[in-house]
Image 1 (cartoon, each protein chain N blue to C red):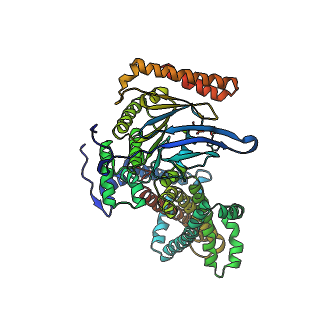
Image 2: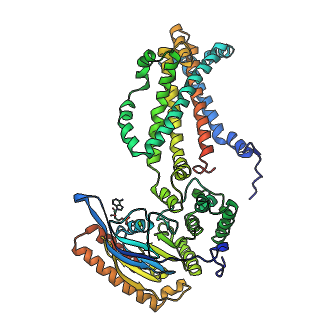
Image 3: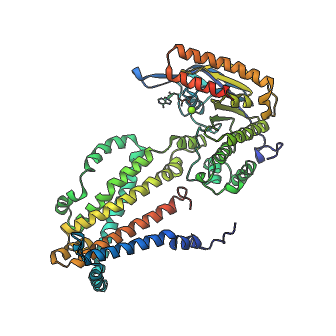
Length: 271
Length: 293
Ligand SMILES: Nc1ncnc2c1ncn2[C@@H]1O[C@H](COP(=O)(O)OP(=O)(O)O)[C@@H](O)[C@H]1O
Ligand SMILES: [Mg+2]
């Protein structure tokens, strides 16, 4: 083989990283994004019905330049990210142990599962009024609603992950002499990691959806509010900027989770 | 792998145990759904012998292994190793499962060293040295840092064999270990396995539904009855060791095969008359598969 020696930086193979950044997949993605923008511009220019009503990229761009220089715009990013991360992280802190315990203990599962299954179908946004009433500050109620978005997904994914562990792994481990906490640490935890990351990916998506909607309903800050405010003010290009910002923010969050997942479960995907 | 080197490497020869299965029964389900899978089954795994258990698929072979390994308890009957009743799973009786049960999140080396390390018997360095010694013998030394999905089916089986052997079990139990491998790999694995056995003469239980494989490997062939399973006949296979594939063309081999086929055929007919359609199909399939070779 004529492969070059890998160069490592902080445990990352730089050659592979370069290859994956400047890959055909990346180029194709960029080409598709550019094509979409061109198509959108054309739709606006030729006033195609309905879709042509969206402000053209050219007009969005000039207003984007303004926005990027406005600290208030960046403040929206910070506020929304703050809410998403707070709710998401609390959901992990409570949801992961709860899912594990429910998966491992039949009694606790029997006790908590029915309640959970009744609460789960309630859309997080339906909690907004109660949350606003019961939590002392509006910010706390926002975080609570965000938390709910990720919480149920986490619990159910982890519960499913634990229950679906191949019994032969547990049996082999027992035969080989491990028991109790050892099996938990060496078998149950790693076997559940893939479902944990699935839960995180789905949960992160729900969290952004919830935050944006909640900001439109019950807040005066954040990317969701920016979008809504621009609608009320009739500033159409900024609506588009708000939407695309939300898209990019969600994409970045998922990308981080995917990276983390690939890093921590290297046995699933061999590059 | 040199034929004169012991697989046990640094730790001296392996010591086989004797397992006695007496009047074991096991059923699943309750009421009308109750299904007697094993009934009044008795046989012995003689020390240092390779006992092959043959029966059609679905007759209860895996259930039997689960009982012997201590994963499940029999409804009645006793299972002893060297005279002492078994209590749950233990490292003296290790199982190589029907499909690979290597831990997917551990590398080859981590899988192999799992047992000794969790039991904390030796230092990590010692254990790893021994593991590498064994991995070299089965040609896996270059794959020490690969995950199971990066190994071929045959490599996974070899890795699993080593993961069991490093614990110096008294009894090795193999549940249709080569099923699902392609014909070439399967033949290779049979040869690997029979060499390992002939070097160590560890007490082995090998389960299969293929008659040719069964006779090729066995010192003693236990033929199971149809469900509910019990040991119907034991045939002592007195073919010379080391076993070579050319044995399959000898008169002695054909004699054993004929003898076994007659019994299998009888069992199939019995299943017919008891009107148990699905199992008959299984039985006849196993039968014709063997005969067509
Ligand atoms: N845990 C279980 N619960 C209920 N039925 C089972 C269980 N395990 C096995 N059986 C039944 O026992 C029979 C024998 O299964 P098995 O031992 O896997 O057969 P084999 O390994 O010979 O193919 C099957 O009919 C199966 O349905
Ligand atoms: Mg089976």
